[in-house]
Length: 314
Image 1 (spheres, one colour):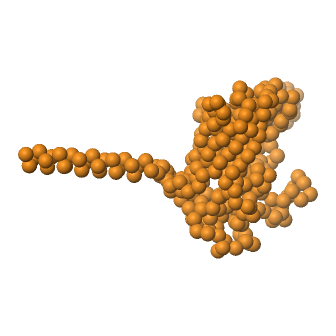
Image 2: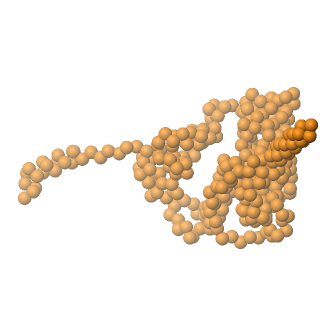
């Protein structure tokens, strides 16, 4: 009898332990490795006071019309609610701005489905949440032409949208996050709401509310646009960043999503380069020739032989 009681108590204890472990595991997200490439650094003069910023990560809805300076405290009125509108078939965007006076590990954002009336839904698969990365740029000044780098002011500009899942934020820096919403052409018009959760080190810190009004108008598919977009493409940059051999199968696979992104924006022009290192190779990733060059010298050789037969070799 005593043995049966002990066994029952032991089993109950194990069950309770399993429930406790399961509960603790599901109360927060799994921690991720957020190692990424290191951005360029510049000596800067900070004009805002980071010491007045509260501890921990700060977050707010930002403006898509503003480029936030990396080393300055953002000038913004903190808001947790965003409202926007779009046609069916249109792309719309929002921007979140994060900042912290302390270093913050493993920052991650998770956007839910957009829920409308009568069960209407825009899936999270129609959205992207990407960290904005800072790149080097300089002043335009008098325009293109020969430039001595030391004669032009250099700065860091919020520009590239990174597809990484999470990011470590350095102390006394700001980090924008760009949200892209692709409204399906067959979406139901009306009001939709989604939530955007902010996590640090696997723990939820903030929740934003996103309200989207779908107008009962439809934007034609990009293949039907008369809009003419001509952005230069550099496939050699894709090969370098992906670590693949130019024009290998892996390179073609890496190029496809880049070209698809351009096409969906209205791109109409294909960039090709015939010469090796055009423009004196002034780009970070020099263009190479995209054709095979063959030099034929037989005609010149025949003329040389003819000249030798009439005494030019004497």
